[in-house]
Image 1 (cartoon, helix red, strand yellow):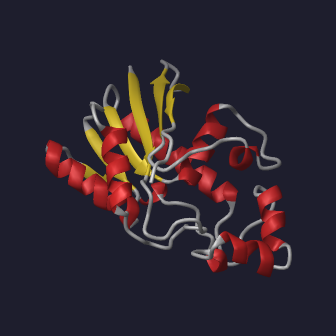
Image 2 (image 1 turned 60 degrees about the vertical axis):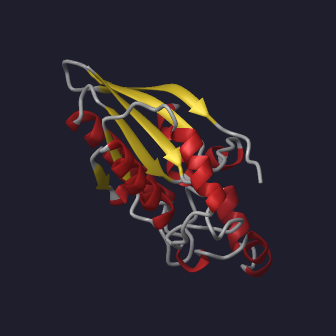
Image 3 (image 1 turned 135 degrees about the vertical axis):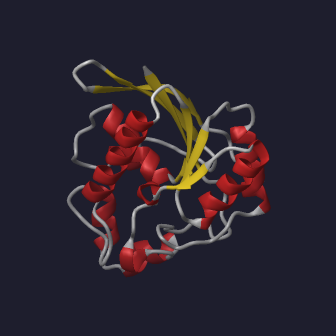
Length: 205
């Protein structure tokens, strides 16, 4: 029996164009509009959300509107960028003595100062998906999350190499982008994930 998981990135937040990990701004009016458009027509049985406001506020509102259960799932949070969290990209490129450039090139080998490793993010996200797929067999689940989480899901689906930055530099995931995957568990307990859809809307002001 298959479980369908639809992951949607939050809409445009109040603080954009910077490294948002655990920094916690809410959505702009445009961000709310983007999320409503992206989730319009989706048929889901339950909603799981990152605890951060740019995800949770919309998830809770959608749950109330559709009378669906909403559960906070901390493993769907964005990577913790430590000392870099919340800084704009110009500052990061210019004032980190090359450390941010090195991290961008080799995110599997480098870790933001005081932050979380890509390996840790990969492990918690994979664990969350497998648990949700196992505990909610046959259901359609909506996961409101972040671009970093979704990039690691794509890398996991395609069994990408844990070298370089292909999951960062070769995939565009705009605000309110959406991916859907199915998880099928066979008689031996092996889980087989499959990408079903990728929706990446053009951002408009």
